[in-house]
Length: 451
Image 1 (cartoon, rainbow, N blue to C red):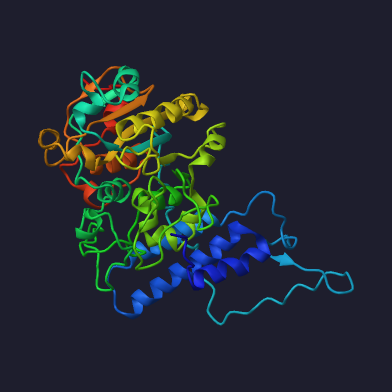
Image 2: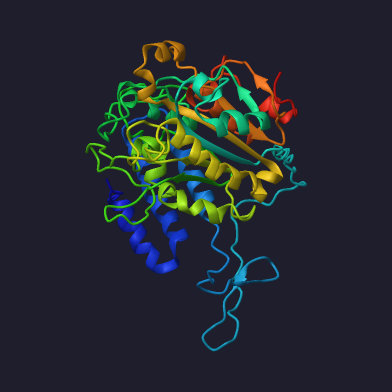
């Protein structure tokens, strides 16, 4: 697997990077890609180009401010007394003011009518939670994680009393990708994502989104107009990061936004990084506009980012590799595997998150499951207990959550997406906007962690 070239977009990035740095290069690339998409949509008579325009707008807004360390290319012209600008003549003397342009229309006889000023929209008030951390694992089953004798003692015994247990949290499917995609975009499962996209394939050109933005055709890499929660955060001038354990290029060096070649098989190494655990590489809106390369990074970068509030993103998605996520048969011989490996991963990273300044200030940590360990399903009794949809549970930790609380409301990955949107005052996406989808935000913001 490797990060594949993005055609004209990459060439634009490389060229622009030699002029003004990475920030400007992403602006140029995003402008070219998104503008071309909008023009193409208009030329083909597409009726719903608003999401495309919004995508271009958020990219320009997010990348238009130059970095503080980059000098201006030229001094700004000085303003004259009338608000115009003047430039010095070659001799150093100011140029003469231009002659006034005479109008052929008669001058108005009365006072001009003043237009009523449009009422200013009140600024959106930020919620109390401004830093969200999500750790996504493979579930050994609800009882094995949170029961009386948990196979994950750090999660089920040490962390459980500190947070709120979502005792009726269920998945949309037993595989990883459809649940993770729903969490960050509200897109429902399709036949290919239910199979964890064994081939990294595009949606067909005829795939169209409905009024809620849901793309119902089968495919893996969503069209550029499919908006994700990450896109929304950038448009709101908020920050996001995804941290993927073991993500590296073909030479083994840590790399960002790694995905298979288009239409190639996803064949990860045993116990290593897998694209199916990284939902952000399945959206053209993040791939084509440079945001995935910028923000989808190896897990090794999380330590440094946690040191200060200023370096910690508002939304942080964390995924272990195939061994530490909790899938049996993926770890080296003699090492903890399955639920034990996932629990060890939590015991390493959760204390770092809980000790971080951003979490202490206004943070929320969600330990969730986006798949079921296939090994757990081999036991018919365990498989029956997990059920369909699979009941896996989840745990919330925050100073805004009641320690030891339990919330028995029926939640699923759409609920997480809606919760993220509500916490950051954004609109829920796709199926997460459904009237029956429950959000956790009201309880968290009301300082009520559960029953």
